[in-house]
Image (tube, rainbow, N blue to C red; front, side):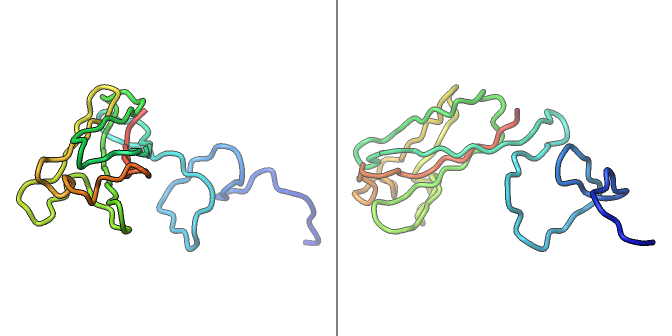
Length: 148
């Protein structure tokens, strides 16, 4: 009974604001999480911490230059997932590099080649047009999920 001053050194069942702590059970957040969630732990064979890296493609005139490479700086064997979004010269539409545009064949593809992501457009596909020939801006983004 009475008044209490100061801070508790430990709280049974509490979540601390600093230091390492293991939190068990499902947690639901009713508000936006502010700050950094650096990684998610992967389980199973080949487990590691899953991380994400986002790279700018940079200038790429897809109409006149059918392929481009972007260095990813990772060990290729640790890459688990890649997605690539392409921006046209005008508008705010983002298209996956495998975009078909209603055709049976994708307009582009990519490969992980050692330290690079190799991207190419298909001749006659949607990206082989003047809608994708500007070199005055970033053509899009590569998102890589990998384990460390």
